[in-house]
Image 1: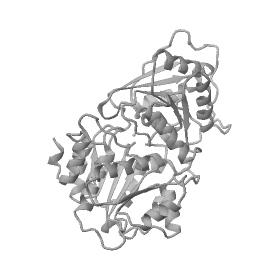
Image 2: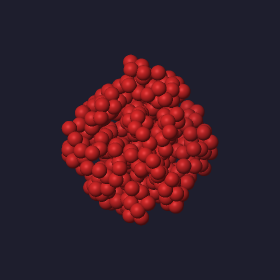
Image 3: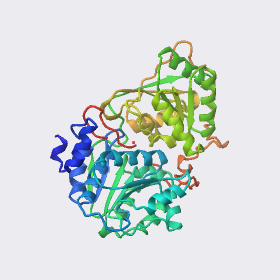
Image 4: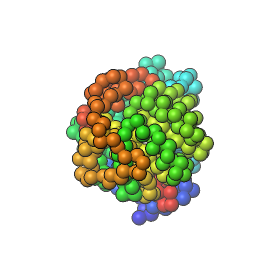
Length: 433
């Protein structure tokens, strides 16, 4: 099914064609016609399947079909995202696909100065992409008016709940037109009971669009477990990167301190590395990501806050230096590779302390992951497991939900145990992002 059968405007089809895409992904082909019909949508698909374009394209189409209001433009479409990186990615998609339309957009998130955002909002924007914390900062300063929002999008809704944004979401809902006067779209990687409860309050008789098994991993991802002692993980990681000449590797740790320490150790091993996590300023995060994408940095070490906000075309390797405390996070982490039909490799370095976490991941995936012991790095059978520490000296894992939100403020987690696959890239050859 080509894009020109979906009912999109000529300007949007031109922009899609300029990106080299010829046919929509399954989530796009199913969601776009429904959204264009004006119905509320609850859509889900695994990571890397094109969810971002699935709502960006029809949103742009609908706004462009109506006359542009005279005077200062009101915000007519609002997209909420859980992280700064994801907000920036959605903003890029809006600009890319809307380049031939007379629409204005803005992206606002925390960690940067607010005054430039205020000036941009005063000039008027049609589409606003925002993290909840910074959006409420603007609302509190009366620098944004959401009373004329026609389309509301919650992107990565499951991650929103996991990061404790439910109260902020309710505050935002109080600032926009009531349910019957707007179209609402909820995009999520997983549909937990809590997500469905949120949808019942947010959506009006929504159409359910789901094209993949929940908590599934992309078929193009080769997964392997390397058992190794905790004290030798860094040594093994450096060996693999050097021996296989990996030029671009995304590595996940549990804690911010662990990410910083590992990046420093890899630098001492002669590998260009950078860390990205919630305590880094937005400028530092942006620079690290840009250097990684350009190849100046070979290894990017990240915490789970990056699992939903990193969109790197054809990323070949993801390494779980430490398994996540929450099994669903494994799916989101490795979903940074093997995106949109490309192939990728996901390697996990697992010590004896993490055997319980590994069993949880395999139960979630409903399959055993292959274990390969590398010569010279065989685990010492005499080492006994110790409780997993969360970086605060606790043996019980602190949920990632209490990480900082887009405004830099710390939010308490109200998340349930069920969780959260990012944004929507596309198959480079033929499908839109």
